[in-house]
Length: 89
Image 1 (cartoon, one colour):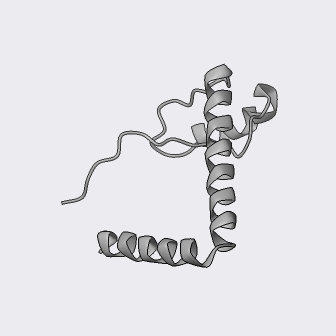
Image 2 (tube, rainbow, N blue to C red):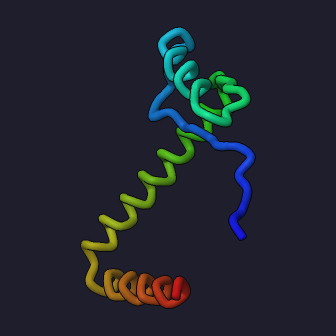
């Protein structure tokens, strides 16, 4: 049997002014079965979450680049990635 979906979340690529996004809100509201569309205003919490995600990504990228410079660490990284792949299976 197929699962029933009660709502969808749409995430915008970047913060957009309310008056600039109104046409998107109106368009989504015209889609069949849409009961309501409510914009969520960006605040300090959403800004902090974005910055933390950026910091996590930057740290990961830095770690990957530094590991690529050291053969022993590179071998350990390859082994770790292989373990992750096995866990996914």
